[in-house]
Image (tube, rainbow, N blue to C red; front, side):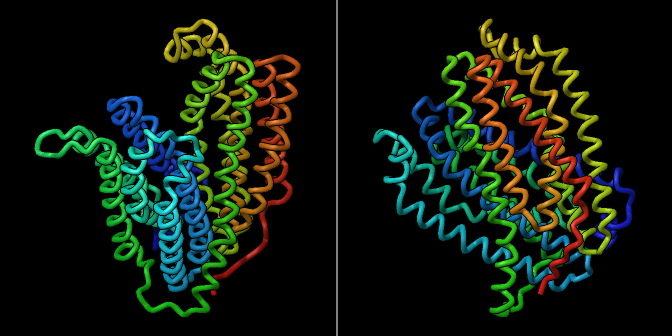
Length: 450
């Protein structure tokens, strides 16, 4: 297909730019999806909002698994398509979806059977358990409808099409936003279902996304095979998928674990410091959207070109993306430096929190360019199906650099020392990523599907 071949032949910079825009829109849609749910549930009162908050660790584990499975499918599928193995790619996609459904069914069954024990261990009081069950029974039952479109969208991105997955995510977010008030508060002919209505709204939006994604995979991309799978081939495909998916999933989990430990350091310096960091984290999530989107599209670019044996093109794509990250995020840093006082006014009325937030925004964003380079290297390693190296590098960044430097900074200069530690960790990790990309890329390895 022309769309697939363009990853192998089109000018690299314009191609990555055209793919990144729709992906950024999709990421914004996902962020808005979560914010809309939180907003409407918050209108129900403190207890419903607290109940849903207790579900976040569980839902995060499931979505991390889905992201890992998507990364594994995208990498292997991209290499197969780059090598012209379309038939094998279709069988691999089908086997990957089957494994995804089996895994999520097992996790959901375990979750349904252990809700009382699990959420009590997470600290939920007995008054919140019934509310949590109202939400999670529906969530667990409908979780396959979340996993399937996430994995399917990763497969579609592997072909080089980011517009369609971005549009699907956007429409799903809009459907959820419309259904939330109708089912939560019982507007018009709809019943007032409260917190359960929020879960049903999400489930219906996931169902829409799943139907569309499966239709596109079957009829447009022709990447689903309905032939009964050969058992040995199926097991081989599952091993190949999990070889990338497991490390990629753990990589997603490491970040919130490190953030939780960092929060313990920040808490020693008062609620103002915690509040400032919380606001800074939300700002950071926004200004790094372009880097997240570029990372997502770089992986299929790398995997297809590696599959086609175009290793130098893969290397050039990664280095070009890193150069863009350094320039783009330098501009972001200068904007944040100038607007830091105004941004702080938007987030807080407290002079102490405002001062700390401005301090963060005029210090840490200096490292966002190199942080973006680190993110891009991780995506490229996933595209090469060596995500275990990405996991090791991310572990080094978080637990070998960020937390130790933040701890040293806390002892030397308090909150400002912690912010400086974050800055230094990002600079060192990003420099390591740039050196690694320059000296070790391309990896001349091939793992054809069998």
